[in-house]
Amino acid sequence: AGGVGGPRNHRCRALSIALMCPRAPIDSAMVSLRLYKTGTADEKRDEAKLATALRVAGASLATLKQERCYMVALEDGAPALSAGDASKLRWLVAETFEQDKTSCSPGLAAPAASDAHTMLLEVGPRLTFATAWSSNAVAICQSAGLRSVARVEMSRRYLISTAEPLTPALRAAVSAALHDRMTEQVYPEPLQSFSSEAPAAAATRTIPLMAEGRAALERLDKEMGLGFDEADLDYYTNLFVDKLGRDPTDVECFDMAQSNSEHSRHWFFGGKMVIDGVEQPQTLFKMVKETLKGDKVVDNSVIAFHDNSSAITGFGVSPLRPSSATGPSEYKQTAELSHLLLTAETHNFPTGVAPFPGAETGTGGRLRDTHATGRGSLVGAGVSAYCTGNLRI
Image (tube, rainbow, N blue to C red; front, top):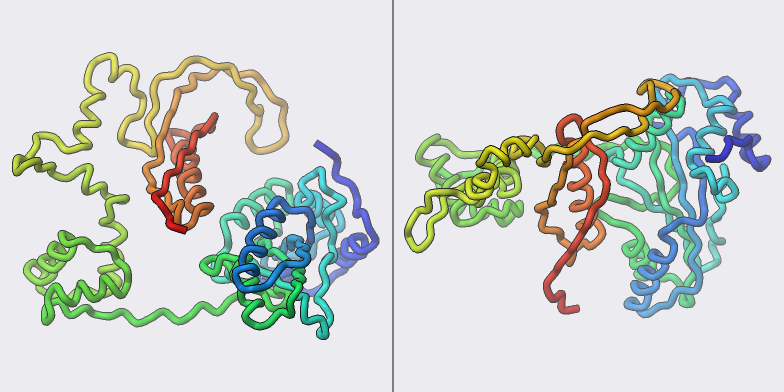
């Protein structure tokens, strides 16, 4: 949909020519190319968040302009992109129909030092990891023939003006409102490299269970937020003190908190169920699996309780498929048996704490589970419902 045109302005044309010139091999950590795009879908949301944050801080927003910056790094030792490849990359970033909103030069400039009411803020992902977005972007570039692209990250650039002078406190409020400090960071200067010096790993600690008993584990639980309940504390204390006869390390305790969680092991669903002092003959999981018994059910169930989702017998379909999966090819009608899949995500979405990330976790989990079932599946539709208690705000 839409052709791949040449550069639309002299700056991009000059960049394409410069990229063709011989130069030293490129380090994959170095940002070798930047593209800028205006008109993002998040503008209204960001403006509302910032206006609210400033109002709480006793200030008001005058204007907000923003753009995205796409930073590209190439493989170690790769030559610079040719003019054709640079144009192809720009076309991908522009998303076909918005070529006029994409440029090779920034549209926002830092304000003059004397302007106390305006600031330029750039935020992007932390440098200690490559984002999932980057993995997808690189895969698209590779499929488009841009084999030397190693990493693509996206930052957001804001030019903010306020009615009041921007004090250090107001600048901090602006920064906090416009980025997630857990996964993102502020870039004081345009990023030159993705390399980052990771902090040195902390030394492993031994938890003195043999000398202090359960109290030592309780203290670590509060310190590291392990989420151990009473049964966990008793069980692990008994395991190390009475059975293994040694102290655990903090790494072991952290690992047990993750791998032995209800989410991973389903202890509650798979454990013994005692009602009014009487142990029941079946666990909750066994009760659920009981519905699979019977000849008709067995014949109709293709996958049950041994994959990411379950599937029932489907029917014959005649989809159009590419005749080749490794390159451009014509579509041909095929005859296939397509089974039906329905999955439910069991996450307790943290919608009251982090609404958008919580919703992404649930929706992403459902999509991932279906895609990973059998030899793979295609998502047809999804329904979401989120509930939260009284937030008292």
